[in-house]
Image 1 (cartoon, rainbow, N blue to C red):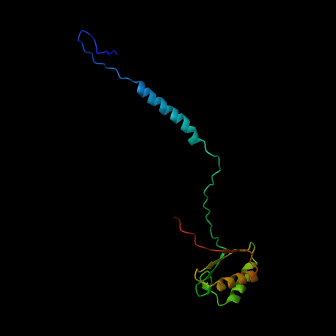
Image 2 (cartoon, rainbow, N blue to C red):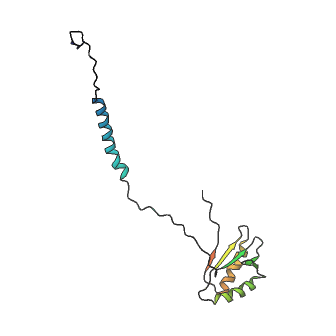
Image 3 (cartoon, rainbow, N blue to C red):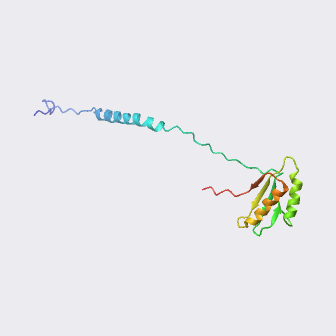
Length: 141
């Protein structure tokens, strides 16, 4: 078994070079790993992602807002209607306009269905074609 212990004349020389072979090996392995994984990350299943739209619904001034409170009372904007027949009479005057306005119904959460049903029936009897319900959007979380 042979061993290199240095020069025979006793001159100890310090080796001042760095062995870069392990560093090159590690860098080549990392390069190969990155070359293999990058195409996998970049290419995925081609899908069309939906675009988020926020449609703002504007209330036109010619729209009619009819509210039904918890007790079943009917309001034309802020004016309380005496009975369903008064509502029908007022809606018949509006139904002849061209274009016909939209009736928007705001029903209280705790009101009975009967109050809202009377409003729908009155709108139908008056001949209004467009009826909408105003609701509160769910909370965003």
